[in-house]
Image 1 (cartoon, rainbow, N blue to C red):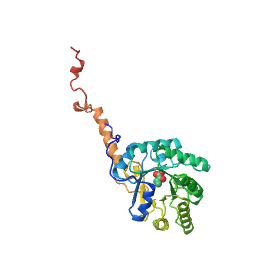
Image 2: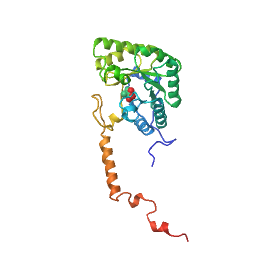
Image 3: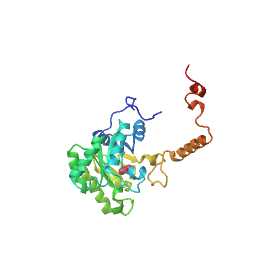
Image 4: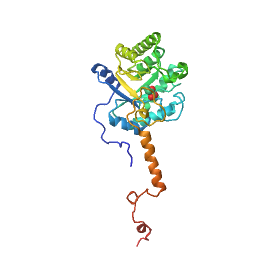
Length: 289
Ligand code: KIV
């Protein structure tokens, strides 16, 4: 039995979330909810739960594909995830993360890659970096591609940062991040992810911008929050970052369910008669009259 949404099935009520609609939220003060998804099943769950924004994040690399960092994930892998998510969501706004290497080489390549994401079903792209990305952001926005910026702890720069460390702790770095945020807004970004920065700095940046901020490890003063799907649901193994609130413990639940299945199969308890077609096997071996 398929649990994926069938075309034509009723979808949750509510208007389609768009980049312009999210900007308006800043004025009304209604917080933005965001989560990652990498496939149709995950996207359909988020959409049904009423999440505003689904990020097809490059954390696909280290949460689902088994890479150690986000760096190796390719355009092809990201595009495949975007297409799958698109098939599962209709209300949430879909933002595709541009993977490492897809926007660093030159403006022309970056534009072509962003266009690929929009053709695959994304409604915006996200890219990491501050003021140095202004020209690219302006080029993409100028071509009708909404851009979400991402500053602070930017995982694609893990080697440059010397690890996954909170950013903006000293005054000089904090001022640079504020300048980065203002530069991205001026270049046309519709929204900014603030990751791994002190809460007072995130609140200050949020107050200085007209576009909304979405925080992850940046405190409650942002205009919205984002978490990684598998962290929120407790699907991943290992230690979680301090900022993760785990709302369920699905990994151990799933392991217990699968252990029970294995035991039932081994003991001949599954399938039972009610889970079997043609309960009377003799009937099927009888020769037709
Ligand atoms: O890839 C990702 O999941 C992200 C979010 C954590 C912001 O970039």
